[in-house]
Length: 144
Image (tube, rainbow, N blue to C red; front, side):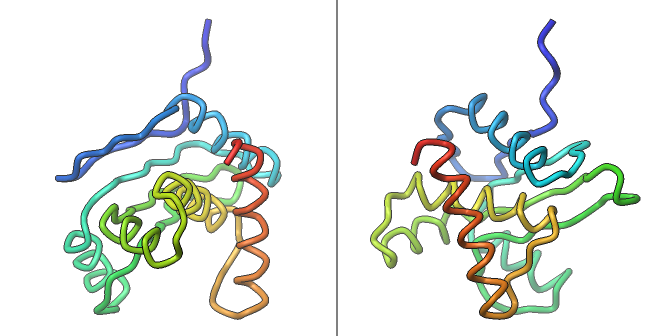
């Protein structure tokens, strides 16, 4: 009997084309395992710029566009429960600006949200370098 996934993908008013869903779910679960964390449930909600900006204003009191916002709903540190909201508009804009393939940028941001729940931060330059290295590691493991 196949084990039930702990990773879920949802679309909020956007056309989500996510290839290799099952492989990606397994890669996210493996990320938590490799980082020594017990994943209970991880939701990814893909949306547009306006939806994510609204969330940013309401919950973080920031009035600007961003690519991802991750919420940690874990009741304790023994099992991680989280949710990441990802703007596909921002992913598209960032991939053009950075001259990277859209799919690679999308995967980077997906892994970024999981890494935040594993305790990685990106507020200081050293933290940003560390989380980028981890993103690169998991992108390579995924085959990007």
